[in-house]
Image (cartoon, rainbow, N blue to C red; front, top):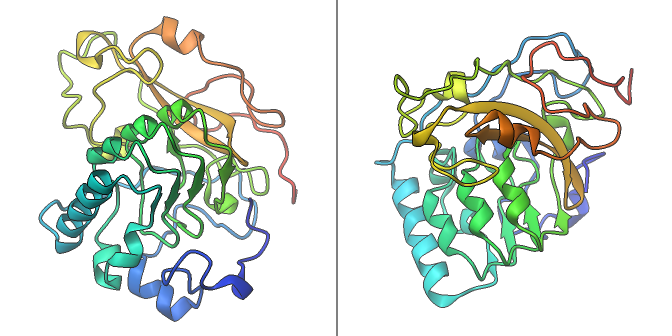
Length: 269
């Protein structure tokens, strides 16, 4: 589902984080000025959020506990933010790798989060059927690994917050040149300002270790469940990039490096 308007008549649909009032939103979300989410500006320069997760924050520790509980009881619906205080929610800018243990979860609800990135481990949530990160206005892209969630058929995403979205066509961050070796790069401690993420261990395409070869990042827009999402691919080789599918209709059809790439006209152009 895309976001023509926020569902004010359904405030309790996704739990107590769903209140769209601006004064409440400010308690749990930081402001985002990456691009104007209300009008087209396709030639603006954009970048990645540079924040790193504070793993000493109470909200992070609480989230780890909630994931442990959900993995242990095999629950099929996971709404972690409803269990956190507004301040704890604001402390969460990514999810921990331990979400890979949530193999029974069919519906993941992250309504109104302060997230700026999702880890590739979401691809291990093999039972996932519905994904709801709606009104997560700082979440502009997703890892290619989400395509491994083969049962995922429903999503509710704030479309106007996405890089390259069909309404506004904001640009994509320019990706780094692709090194053929990671000798001078630590895939376990990357600068998110340049690479979008802090960690990348396995190839997004073939899952081979990145440590054994180069790091080739590209963007591709694909339909995932209900929405077309901008996906960041961290591949181990040119061959894996070449193995990617074509992009979604009315989007850039080939994998690309971002920046001032030519996109189809916006819906509102």
